[in-house]
Image: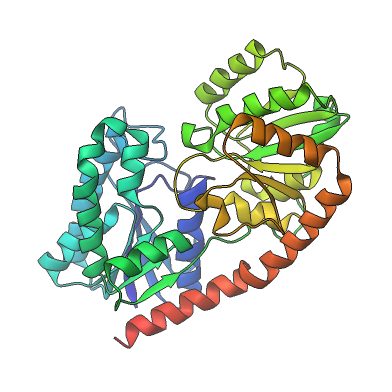
Length: 384
């Protein structure tokens, strides 16, 4: 197939959706499809097999586009839509593959050009809107209606997790729908080493968080829980990898207010190809997310590392995690602090959780499983 793949994101960047877009576009190219990937102007230039990258116009002052809804993103969406129109006018495409809000563009393009589309459903946008901007709750029902129409008019929907799959099936029970979870990003290749224990002077149990520092990730909960846990166990350190400089500065100040200098370290953004090296140095990996219903991409790499995982007991996690492979706690300070203390004090429990988690990844969330699902979905599309 000749596919116009619209991903309204900075590309390439080492974070969530751009990583997922890269993996899927690369997989489609490797499977023989011709992919034209349309993305924002911002991001690293990369090369993928059978993939041509197109960018929207570069606009003055539009830089550092963060995840989630923002004025900058909406402005870029406007320009990416008209870039998509120009591409469809100049080339022959069999299908539009639309990620997140690009599905509304694809819905319009279907009626303009009579071209079918796939909805790559990475999140429930109506839920994200209300969680980030509670004052806009009156818009939620309208957004849900638009999402429903987007699923119903699609040739197929790819849902990134069970909760989104259930939503898509509720919207359109007879449509082609597949659950295509993210996968581990760890590889068997040798990685550059950065000894955190030596560089930071860590002598005890190391907790680690990897990801952005947006509010929905629960970083405030993590830091406050860690402060409470230190009152019981002194043998613990917290390393946080990721986040913008502004977010890091904000949370460093919070750490200083709680008198945890020398116990909490911020390492900033690091290359994805060093992820395995960092995870291997930790004793406990944490995901304190408090909002959303899609599973964080990092969870699959966490599980593959063979280290114990501590996560909030919310659907964002429990659709992949259970008590046999992770320590799940209520999303509140005392419960998370208790989970930290339990894992810090029980090395055998950490080892058992990590071993079972790694086995789960091999059977359900590996690259071969991912590629097989993509091939089967696109084969089903071609037969419709």
